[in-house]
Length: 158
Image 1 (cartoon, rainbow, N blue to C red):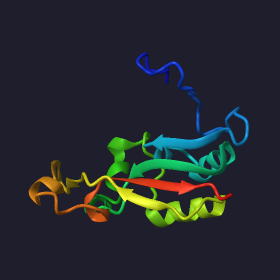
Image 2 (tube, one colour):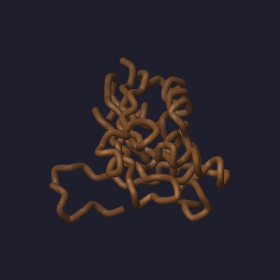
Image 3 (cartoon, rainbow, N blue to C red):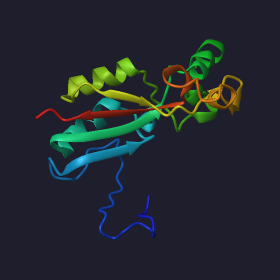
Image 4 (cartoon, rainbow, N blue to C red):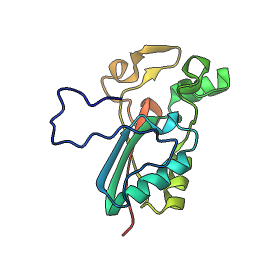
């Protein structure tokens, strides 16, 4: 991916294949942000170890991924045999589904702090994804079961 033209030139833009080790020095970054990437990778453990290597001690990792514990995704798993973001029409883009426990284990094994999970509070209704739980409930239905995506925040242990 090329650097967006509108991006300030002081921002360091790096475009790499995260399925492979990166040619970047250890402990280069204070923060790594990776939205909607990890589910596209063959080996999430390898990329998490790479993120750990690239972060300075105490550095922050923020990433997001499909929430496979939402009602919509669980319904898809029961009915179609796959989480909703990993059905045949999403393949081969989405290849590695994870639930919170998987993410927590991978981060812990790699040397990150206990993750904080934040939910986007935007989620489609099973079989009617253009209708959102939030619009039919006046915003009351949110969190784990009613969000299509989750955000993970953790820190490299010092």
